[in-house]
Image 1 (cartoon, rainbow, N blue to C red):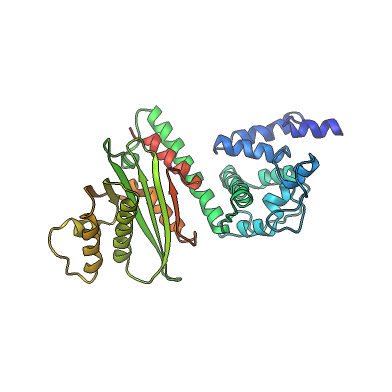
Image 2: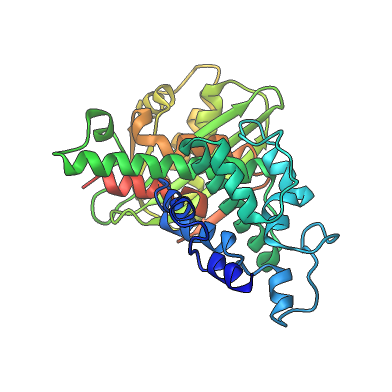
Length: 346
C-alpha cells in the first residue's frame, strides 16, 4: 500500500497503460508548462499547503489561512474552501453545480477528466492555478482577489496562450494570418507606446479604465487599472481614459510617448487644431491641454485587433474594485496576452 501511494505521488501509473494515459492526458493539455507542473504537484500531493507543511514539521498549524475553519489540504485549498466555492460559482464556470464530495485532489482530477472535454479541462486547470496564486498572494502580500478576478484572469490568460500557439503555428508555416498582422506593433527606439481603453457597466454605473505602457523591446514599463463610478456616454469615457493615460505618463516622467487606442471619434477630435464645440468638448480640450505639457508625443488610432490587451482588461478593471498600478512589471494575469503580442510581431 505504501509503495502504491509513493508510486502515485511520483506520477507513476498504478494500473499500467490506463493509469499512464491519465498522465499523458495532463501533459498533452494546451496550457502553459508552469500550469501543467502545478497540476502534477497537486495530483502528487506536493503543493505546500499548511497541512503538508505541518506534516513535515514546518509551521504552527494546518488551518486554512483564508476560511480559518478547516485543515488546509490540497483538496480544501483548491476545491472545498468556502472562498473557493465562490470562484467555481462564477457565471461561465463548467463546474458550477458539481458536488465537492471527493476523496482527494487526484480523485477530483480523475472525475474532471472523465466528465469534461479537453477545452473545458484546460479552463478548469487555469482556474485552479489562479486559485492557488490568489491563496499565495493573500498569505504573502495580504491581498485577496475577488472570485470574478480569479475566474476572468484565468480565462484571459488561457485565451492569450491559445492565441500565441496559433500564431506560432502560423509563423512556422510561412507567416501570420491577415488578422494577426493587425496586432500590436512596437514603438521606435527611444519611444514608449501607451495603449488605453475603457469599459462601461451601465447597470451598476461603473467604468473601468485600463492603461498598458510598453517600450520598443515589448517590455511592460507600467500598467494601470482604475474603476470609476459614473454614468455617461461611451465617447466621454474614452476621452477620460485618454486624459488619464496622459496624466499617468506625466507622473512617471515619460516624455516620448505614442498614445494609441481604438476610440476613433475622440482621437480624430483631439488631433484637430480647432476648438471642440461638441457637448463633450470640455473633456477633449482638457486632453489637448494635457498633451501640451509633454515634450514629444504622438496619438494614433488602431483597430481593435491592435488594442486587444487594453480592450480586454478594461472590462477586467470593472471587477478589480480599486486603483491598481504596476511599475516595470507585467501583471501575472496578462502575461499570456503579452506573449501573444511578442510571438506575432517582429
